[in-house]
Amino acid sequence: MLLLTGREMAEFDQKAINEYGIPGIVLMENAALKTFYRIKEILGEVAGKKIIILVGKGNNGGDGLALARHLANAGAKIRVFLLFKDQFKGDALINFHILKKMSEKIYEGVTENLNLLKISLIDADMVVDAIYGTGFRGALPPEIREVVEIVNQAEAIKLAVDIPSGVDSSTGRVEGTAFLADYTVTFGLPKLGQILYPGRSYCGKVLVEDISFPEKLKKEFPVKRWLLDKKVIKKFLKPLAPDTHKGRQGFGLVVGGSMDYSGAPFLAAKGSLAVGAGGVYLAIPENLFGVLAGKAPEIILRGLPAADGQISSKGFLEVEKILPKVKAVVIGPGMGALAESKEAYLNFLENCPLPVVVDADGLNNLIGNLEFLQKRNAATVLTPHLGEMARLLGTSIEEIKEKREEIGKKFAVDYNVYLVLKSETTAVFNPEGEIWYYPGGHPILAKAGSGDILAGLIMGFLAQGYGTGEAVLLGVYLHGKAGELAQKENSPRSFFISEIFSYINEAFGKLDEYGKKTFHLEK
Image 1: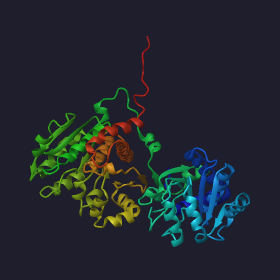
Image 2: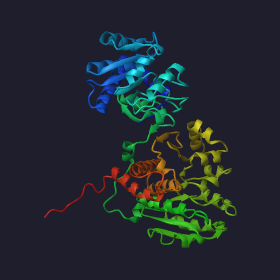
Image 3: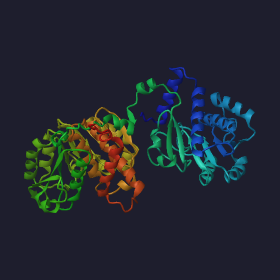
Image 4: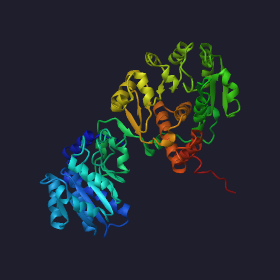
């Protein structure tokens, strides 16, 4: 599903109106109807329900006026508060004239009706925000901010039309405050500001509704940014052949570990097995062999020559001997800041002929040496969190957040890599300049080892022969979905990240058709 900024959505709207000939008032009516149906679904029935509609002066306000008409026709007890005087034009003005003939419960102006609003909120069933739409930028004006702050304290269910007022639809930025919705009914396509924080925390449950935008327009619209969802993932996931075997499923390799960090590479190795790799080698400093031996009999351990508890230069030469047995590599988890063997690591990365997922200390040891990425001839995946990305580029986390698309897209294209920029909303950038967002960050995943598991998931798919882009998106989705499932049943405070593997299995079960249809021989 395409994911648009506010400016892109405005352009999309205009193309629908001007190039396809869909009247704006038709789109407005469809938006109002779809919102009305959602309200009926949420409230159960609208007849007799007390619903307040806060109306602004643009097309978002027009949506609210048309919605008020449908609610009134269905028997709802509506009160419409117009927050701007002499505010309407075009399609919104048409809907205002219609509603004015239907209802006397229309109150114009903020200051003179503030007490009435407060009284109305005491027993209101729902408050609808149709003040500002996706074109809003900056801070709410003081008088509108006062209204929003009062409404946010009310016990009524709160629903935003398209986007909560006060949220920047392109960045998710909120200056001061915004309407705190329980539900947001958004039209046509999701907006970037609805999945980026802090905007995301004001949207509640986002419901995307089709209002008759042409599918052809969606396919032809020149934006290469998508929302990663189950529908996309199910297209990528290949069925398991009934006669498959470990060789066909592919073997992977995890290279990492040091005296201080033995768990990180182990978790990555388990991650690759959790998504179906036929087997995995775990190459670690020889001093860790006794620590990890027997922890998981499915993992094949290889002890490497070490120096000061880290993989030595000779160790990386030994890693090369394992490569003919595997199809993909993860390098970096728990590896530490290399001293004696840093050059050997960089040479290995440059010359490795297999797809490589570079994570954790694999990234930290690339600082100042990014040119080695451009020398590689095989696919490369980098999985930094915001702090690691900032260190790689010698900038701040705030700069990365502020310009994540510009920075991420340029980095992926310039260095010919797949960049998984991990955060509460993970962004995936590919060498073709395409961007995918997955809003599946959950506090339960905010634990050491979580990123190592993600690296292993991606490598596990690569080992099975998936394309790099498919492997990355599958790994990101399953990791986030497992976190979502885990958080429904556990406290994120006390959850051990090693427990996530059972939820990866559950997430897979919701996608995978294999095993649901069984072949039986009948007598």
